[in-house]
Image (cartoon, rainbow, N blue to C red; front, side, top):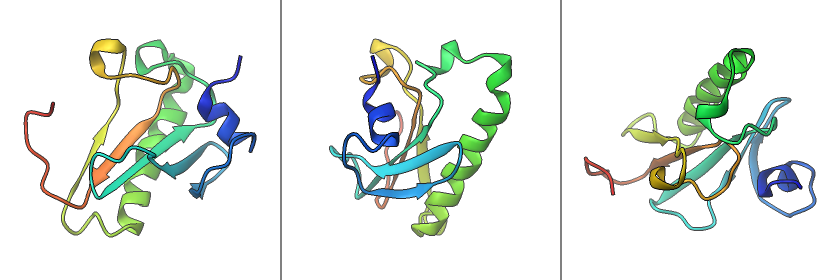
Amino acid sequence: MKTLFEKIAAREIPAAIIYEDEFVFAVRDIHPQAPTHILIVPKKPIPRLAEAGADDQNLLGHLLLKAAEVAAKLGLDKTGFRLVINNGSDGGETVPHLHCHILGGRPLAWPPG
């Protein structure tokens, strides 16, 4: 069964994709937690970071670099942003498909949640 993100990548579910390449895509979160809240998602369905393998190393690096690039295109590099990867239910994971949250547009407190 396909994950929500696999369905978005396959254009089975409409979404406003703001960035896409061969390996990842980025969309606005439908329940934003900050003025700017973007999800950047690998097209390869890895359930969570803890299940990524050595063969995913290049993809994970690409994911992080593209997250920084998307943040910069949105102007977040000027004031700062947070990159979050949830892993497991206690980590806040709600979709079993690895993805990064790019949060910015306001000061973000520490520690989170």
